[in-house]
Amino acid sequence: MKKKILFFLLISGLSFSQQKNLKITDLQPKSEDFAFPKVSYPEKPFVENKINTFLQVDQLVYIPGSAGSPSQLVSTGKTSYSNYVYFYGWEKLKTPKNILSIAITGEASGAYPEGFDSWKNFDLRTGNLINAKDLFHPNSKKTVESLIQKSVRKEVNDFLTELKSDKNPSEEVLDQIAMYEDCFTDFTLDGIEYYFAEDKIRFIAGRCSNHAMRALDDLGSHVVEFPYKNLGKYWSSYAKNLLSDSEKIDKTSINNKLYKGKIDGKYPITVLINSINEDDSFSASYWYDKNKKLINWRGEFVHDHLSITEDDYYSEELKQWVPRALIEADLKGNKIIGTWQDYKTKKYLKLELEEL
Image: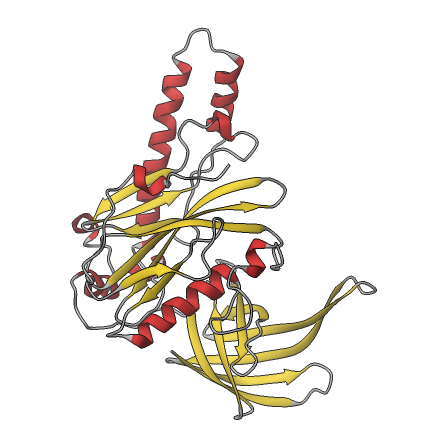
């Protein structure tokens, strides 16, 4: 069943943010199963382009300006993860001046349909996605995670206490108790959703139930909010400038950034680096600017060094992916410099990228 009421409408009064010249419309062609945001920011076309490129590549597996409909792959289940994904709506949230927060709602259908709500937050000075980990001083991340975990556990434990007060619990209540006693609450900044409101930040932690148990889950997703002023001692310098409307831009991590450059000095490409996982693994997508076809990378990022494999095809005989290329490169400031090696010929080509 399609979700006609957005989850975020229940937890926040939403309105347009302060950027008068920034507008969001529906990416065309819009349909009953596809209502996706497209940003227009005439005074900063570079920022506009970066945001739209990120959203469409990340969410739709589609490169802006390439052939076909933007919704074609996700709506027909032809992405690498094979789910059918439908987008039913979006909202532009009220935020501080330097921030654009967009709430997106939809449904993904794999083995079963599952509604989702997602939030994307962008720095309007650069067009970069804002990563939660970049918002806090390195020595404060664990503390902030602990505050979030403590709040979620309290909500779960308080509800457990209420359930256990029933002297003659039904089978359904007993199932609820078992589910909440086994609830995962150790959320980290790596995987949690969040968005900016006008004077506070809200984190949205996943629910205690799996799909089969969802009907028993009266709590649903866990919303943890902090007024900006309450996190003052934990903010990084980047976050302080971001929230104070300052134009000073601090260095941030490689996560979720777009890079542009060339292979062999003559083949222009664009790369989107996804989030670096806790085990240092990551995935990325890139495309040659001429033909605009997505190519996947997988690799590790350790001590500013990237070791990447570009797969060619899956061998049924070998039961594994056969590489097309191996990439070794170093992050140097806002540049990625290294080599792209053809797996068959062993020929090395120079790789040069610069952060957009």
